[in-house]
Length: 224
Image 1 (tube, one colour):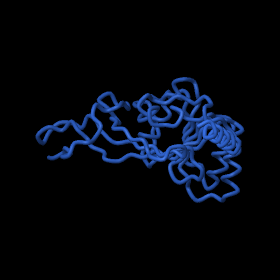
Image 2 (cartoon, helix red, strand yellow):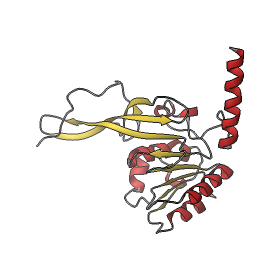
Image 3 (spheres, rainbow, N blue to C red):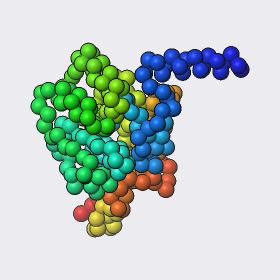
C-alpha cells in the first residue's frame, strides 16, 4: 500500500511538471451545477477546455468568473450577443466581444490571452502544432483559461450537451419556458465522464441543476 501511494505521488509530481501547474491549484469559480462536474471544481488557470457548439453552455462558464472580477473575451462568435450573455448572468462590464478576428484568429486570441484571464474562441481554421504549442505555453505563463468551441489538443476537459428538451407549451398553446439537457464532462484525469441533468435556461433564464437525473421518456413537443 505504501509503495503504491509513493508511486502515485511520483506520477502526480511528474504530471504536474509536464503540465506546468499543480493539480490542486486554485481554480476560477463556475456555477455550482457545473462545479460538480469539472475537475477541481472550476476552471484551472493556464488550461484549455473544449465546449460543444452551444452558446448558452459557453456563456454559462463565463458567469461566475465575470461576476467575481475576471475579465472575459469571446473571439470569433458573431452570433453571440450581449443580451443573451446578460440574461444568463454574465457581467457585461467585464465582457469583451471580438466578433470577427479575421484570418489571424490565433494571433488575436494570443494577444487577448496576454491581458485577460478568460478567453473563449471559435477557431476559423486549423492551427499548426507549433502555433498551438506556443499559445499553450503562453496560457500557462499568464494563467489564462481558454475555452474552445472545437477541437484542441491536450484539453483539460471537454464539455458537451445532449438530450435537450423544451417544456412550457400546453395543449397546442403557450410559451417555451425552460430547456432541460444533460451536460457531460470528460476529463483527462478521470476514466469516465461525469454527467448531470440541468436546466439551461430555467424559468429565470439562468443555468440550474434539474430536479431529475434522466430526461423523461416521452419528450414534449410544441404543436400548433
